[in-house]
Length: 334
Image (cartoon, one colour):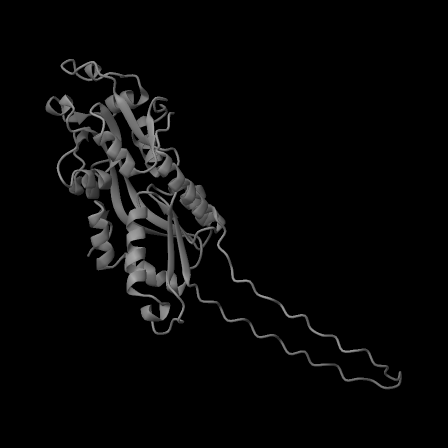
């Protein structure tokens, strides 16, 4: 499939993948080498008392001052925004809780896609993997017995066209079979959708293959069919929504959050109903709109005190407001 990604975006994503894949550094410690006293002769008839070896005290568990999130580009702006406001409010961990040490607060957030995020959590190169899809059973198994997940928001994939497309005045609903045919390239021009429309080529926009949205759409709509090789992949939901907004003959599965933000200052995208169900907040929460997904982060490690403090912040009133500001539906009450 063709990739239309600007050089700057490509460089940014290379950096993001590097950040996700970089090994977390542990502070180096030097082990002192014990000096061996010079040997002395001991008469054979004399016996020396056995030396008493004191057991070494177990080292105190080191406080975790840095936290790393990696993965979903859908969750990235939410966690990134909260990390920024958290570090702006608390310079040192002792400012968060008086029992914490006076260490600088460091929270790193890197995009890269849901698949990259869960892989980073599994191999330990990130503390938390960010996903915008359901986690797979095999991934839960790989994360181990300490697996935990934190669902931050609900999202849906809207089947969106450019608001200037004349189809908006002709139909407002597509069934999953019609959507499948369009995205598979079996229907290639708009007049094949409706005879009153011009014979313009349908330009299909999708997320790149590492994104959770690709898997969600494949499962909910495409089934065993493959998306057309002519589809343009987008590195994030924001880019996907922008691509549709800039192309009058476009169609794509823009996330509900990206769709909401794109239309904030006026309608540039038009979302089709799917099987007669509109992608509204009410229909997404109830589950009536089927093409939807959780937005969450996961880990396979025990939660440290510092991690729990930031998790509490994510699920606070501040976190709720940031989720709404990004166009998503919070998965918890304010």
